[in-house]
Each structure stands twice: as C-alpha cells, then as structure tokens.
Length: 180
Ligand code: IMP
Ligand code: MG
Image (cartoon, rainbow, N blue to C red; front, side, top):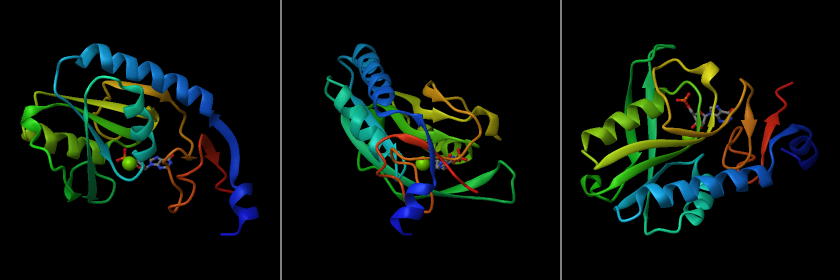
C-alpha cells in the first residue's frame, strides 16, 4: 500500500493518545491497589494487545510478570461453539498467579471466551479480563470483561495495536478505518 492510500483510509480519531494515556494510568493505579502483595501475571493475547500491554505494564508499579499467548479459533459458520488452538503458550505455571488477561478489543467475544476457559482449567489464583475496547453490540457469546476502558460503537477501528490486514498497528492512537 502506498503512503497516500495508507493515510487516506484513516477517517477520524476515535480515541486520542492523551485519552489513552489517562485511562491507562488510572487502570494501572487500580491494579496497584487491588493486587499489591499478590503474585500477578499480565497475559497478553498477540498480536493486537501488544501496545496496550506495553503501556499498561508501565503504568503498574507493583511487582508483576508478563506472559504472551497466541490463539487461533475455529468456528462452524457464525455459531458460537468452536475450538481454540493455542499456537503460542505461556511459560508460567499459572496456578501460582493472579492472572489478568489484557485484551485489545472484545468484538464477538468468541475467541476470548475459549482462551479464558482454557486458562481457568489451569486453576489460577484468580482470573480477570481487562480490555481496552469493547464493542458490546457485536457480541455473540455471553462474555463480559471485568473492566473495559472504552466502549465503542460498531465501527472498524485501527491503531494502537489493532490492524487492518496487518497495517496500522503502529499508529499511536485509535482511529476509524475508512472501508469505502
Ligand atoms: P472476537 O471478539 O473473538 O470477535 O475477536 C476479537 C478480535 O478481532 C480482536 O482481538 C481483533 O484482533 C479483531 N477485531 C475485532 N474488531 C476489530 C476492529 O474494529 N479493528 C481491528 N481488529 C478487530
Ligand atoms: Mg486480539
């Protein structure tokens, strides 16, 4: 894609860098207060959540560990039952940790529901889901994040880790993508 085409698809800013920074600073302070003195593991599901995790982890000031997972899920048509294949797994034994799944966006919720069920089977001390963005109008499974920093309408967004065909993950803010 050439640079002119690339730029022209960024329709408008949905969440600015300043708004992201402020919300993440507050979320970090809440994690500090809730998990002080507890073994904490922040788990990011690649690739979309890598930018959020990088900033969130630096807004947390208590000791914590970081882990990465990648998962591919398979569903029959648009049904909500499916199988998840963990293509990159954690190195930690999570039964020794309080775990927070740090997600970029919950859309249908299908993949995250399967990943959360898989992690729950491993008996963590506790398991919570923190998502940067939530599109509740698109949900097809019963899944609610324990905390969501921004609720957005049903539009396709890019930036801050979120991609369109692998581009725009490095955009420092969240923008609406012009699908034309
Ligand atoms: P779902 O909740 O299982 O439908 O899938 C969520 C995943 O779909 C996210 O982790 C993103 O990778 C992707 N996704 C959903 N909505 C958007 C969007 O608006 N922009 C970019 N990626 C999205
Ligand atoms: Mg994702």
